[in-house]
Amino acid sequence: MNDRAMWRVVAARDFWVRLRDKGFVISTLITLTVLSIFILIRAYGGGPDSFDLGYVGDRTIAERVDALGDRSGIRITVFALLDDASADAALRDGRVDAVVIGAPDAATLRVLRAVPNPLDQLVQAATIGLRIDRALTEAGASSATVRELKDQHPVDASPILPPDPNRDAKASVAFVAVLLLYGQLFGYGIWVATGVIEEKSSRVVEILLSAIRPRQLMAGKIAGIGTLGLIQLIFISVFAISLASVTGVLEIPADTFGAAALVVGWFVLGFAFYASMFAVAGALVSRMEELQNAIVPINLLVFASFFLSIGAVQDPDSGLAKIASLLPISSALAMPVRIVLGSASAWEIAAALAIVIGSTALLIPLAGRLYAGAVLRTGAKVRLRDAWRAAA
Image 1 (cartoon, one colour):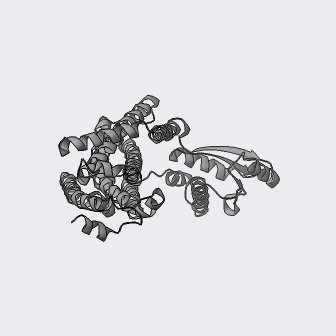
Image 2 (image 1 turned 60 degrees about the horizontal axis):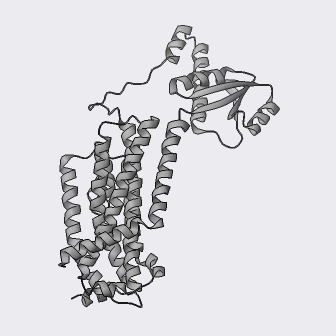
C-alpha cells in the first residue's frame, strides 16, 4: 500500500477501536444525561423569582413591596404575623424569606441569615418611596401630586438597531455550544495522546512504522479519533436541539441547525489545531503516569480558551471577546459564540478562518517532525529539542 492508503487504514482502526471502547459509550451517556438535566431544569424548574414576605404590625411596606414586585415580574406573597416570636419561628421553619417589622420611618427587615438580593432591593425601594411620600405630604403637596410621582414609568430605551427577539435562546445555544466544544476538544485530544502512549509502550508502533511513515501514522490517528468525535458531536447536537424543541424550553430560532453546523465546523478546525499537540505530548513520554505533566501547557491553553468563550457569551462585543475569536488557540470556541449571537462581522469571520487554518497548516508539519523524533524513544521523557534533532 502507498502512504495515503496506509493512513486511512490507521484512521479506520482507531475509529472502530475507540467506538467499541467503554469510555466512548460512558462519555456519550454522561453528556446526554447532563444536557437532558440542563434542558429539563430550564423547561420545568425555572420561572420568575418569587418570595414570601411576612410583616408584623404595619403592613404598608409589605403592600408597597407587593406592588413593586408586580411591576418587576417578581411574585411576592405577603403574610401577617402576630409578633417578633412568630416572625422568628416562620423564618426558622422556612415559611417566609424575610419579615418587615415596624412602620416605614423605623422599620427592621428580619431574616434568617441573609436577604435575597431582589427582595432586599424591593424592600429598600418601598421604604424609601414611602418616606418620600410622607415628606411630600408634610410639605403640603396634594394627594394628586403624590400619586403622580408614585406612578412613574422608566425611561424608554430607543435602540439604533432593533433588538433580537431570540437573543436569550441564542445565548443558551451558545453556552451549550461552548461546553460541548470544550469537552470534545479536551476529551478527544486526550484520546489521541493516550493512543500514542499505548502503541509506544506496547512496541506496536515499531511494527507500524515498518510499513508507514511517522507523520502518516500521526495523521491517521488524528483523523480516526477526530471523525469519531465529530460524529458524536453531531449526534449530541441533534439530540439537544430536539429535546429543547419538544419540551419547549427554547423558542428554537430558524437558524439553530445552522448554528449547530457552525459548531461542528469549528470543532474540526479546533481539533486539527490541538490534536497534533496532544499527539506530540503523547510521543514525548512512555507511560500513562507521565502524560498529565506533559499536557499541562495544552490544558492551560484549552482552559483559557474556555473561560474567554464563556465571557464572550455574556458580552460578545467586548474587546476581549473579539481578540479571543481571532486567536488560533481560542477561535474554535469563541468565534462560534459570536457568530450565533450575531456579533461577528464578515471580515472577522474571514480573518479568524484564515488565521486558524494558516496556524494549523504551520503547526502540523512541526508537530509531525517532533512526533517522528520522539515516538520510537522509550524511557525518560524526551525533550522537545532532542525530538527535533532526532527527526532531522
